[in-house]
Image: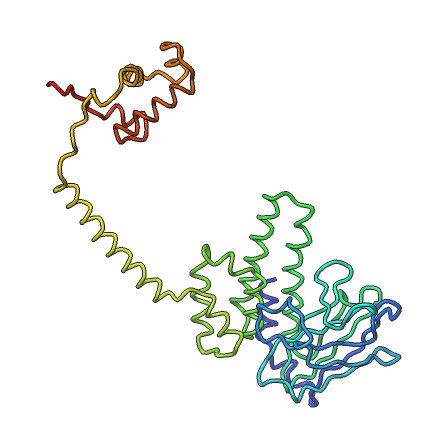
Length: 333
């Protein structure tokens, strides 16, 4: 699988020179009793927006003819490879409708450039999205594989236990990182990283993402600029660690000085406690529980708790353990 993906990623020249004329065209069989016979084309300029939808994102639309054929001109596309989304909408839905997952999923992603000659075709109007094939530009072969791999984790989430689901996701994300690491197309590689939920996995795979940024350090597309902004600056992190370490050392040194030169604590005398509190204090030293103290002194449990709270306050302590470390003296001694 890994070898196959690698070979596909590195075989740009095979498909790139087959077509002389650029364009985005295809033939889609669709159930027109449910769906509008219109193909909508959106430009996805940021991979964070793959699953957002607005009218502003739709850059073109094409009407399907009686045989399901359509075409888009690609000459006005931005320079270089860009991610596009084509989608359909149901008859009662507005054009800017995005359905994610399930039988009503209505979109696919593809990579295209001004020079691309891409053909889109399906063979079943009942599952017109799931069986779509995108040919003519090799990155879309890998893109479909990435979607299928990522989709497997989603499809098992509802039927698997939490532990099994986590294991499946771990294996899926690892496979997506392999694709990202071996693919020679930068946008496909980044697409695999996003599908691998990198923001959640960054903390445990930092070295991978560090190497990934080194590999694509010359990429200055909007896609990579946005991605780099999401990855912590390792130089800044190192500086922060140094500053934090220095601050910790200084703080520790100051605390030691304060401990060494602070004034001795005021002596605590047994007379500071009331008679009842002294009895309870003695029982606390014996390790008795609140209930045992209440039984010994024949008082309510709530009264015991109130006295203990007063003892803590007067002695400036917060626990029974602190009581054992106290050295109460007699005022007369």
